[in-house]
Amino acid sequence: MSETNCCGYIQPIRKVKTFDDVQLWLKSQAYSEILGFLTALNNSVKGKSYKHSYEVCEKMQSVVLLFKHIREDIDQIPLENDQRFGNKAFRVLGERIIQKSDQWIRDILPDDLKGAVIELKAYFDESFGSFGRVDYGTGHEINFLAFCCCLYKIGYFSTDDYVATVFFLFREYLDLMRKIQIWYKLEPAGSHGVWGLDDYQFLPFIFGSAQFLSNPVISPDQFVQPDIVAKYHEDFMFLECIKFINEVKTGPFAEHSNQLWGISGVPTWTKVNGGLIKMYKAEVLAKFPVVQHFVFGSLLSLDST
Image (cartoon, rainbow, N blue to C red; front, side, top):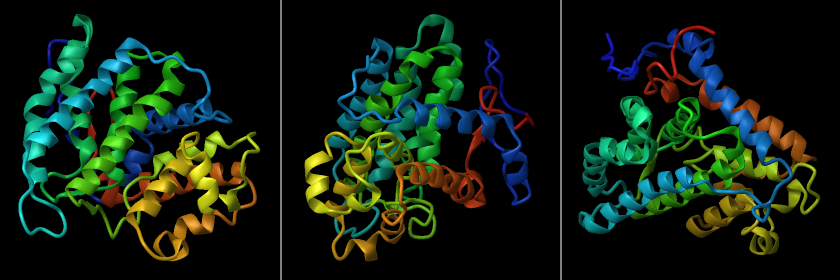
């Protein structure tokens, strides 16, 4: 049984424990909520560059302050010596996040929503990687999506905040995760990042491809061109991702990022965006190694739709 607080929120727990349980997940309210939320965010940024006018509400700025707390802890924790991959100082960061996040989240919520901390914390803590395995992957990325989704479900954000969620909140999360991935030399979760397009992430490529819909700035075969990346990376999330990949990987792009290279051969961004969403559903949301760690409470339930 899950612990229930006075506001009706419950401590989320793992329930996908066998391969057969994945089918329960795919028919669940949680899956429907997550996929619907992803679709809404995707639709909100179609054809829009970062230069598109959007408002960042004070509540969203408060959420981004949570990342500031984490950055401050990173600066205070010395790295351990002689660790080529997966610096174990990451575990110390994890201990601090788990210890402090309850209060961090409580501080940004109005009094009538503070009861939701028990569920929000579960997804927030899992958003930054596995502190035990010292790795990060799309399963952790899903948890951040779930954290944001829950903020909408409790009424903290409104549908007017969709664009800012992608262009401001999710972008800030990406920036923090890139720092963490490099600083702690995190291993890609799963089989060498097989469920991520750049070893770690997937969602920014979905949102990034949506920005190019009805936007003739570049065609899919151009995103691998260094001059295009240099010129437009400050305007588009997809190119921002490619720039990061080029900075941390060496050798021919077709060899170190084969799946992305394949995408460059797709004729239109409409097919790229639709194909990436189908791929995300099949290769991330439907994979037991990814979703076995996901937890379910009252906001995101395993009950069938």
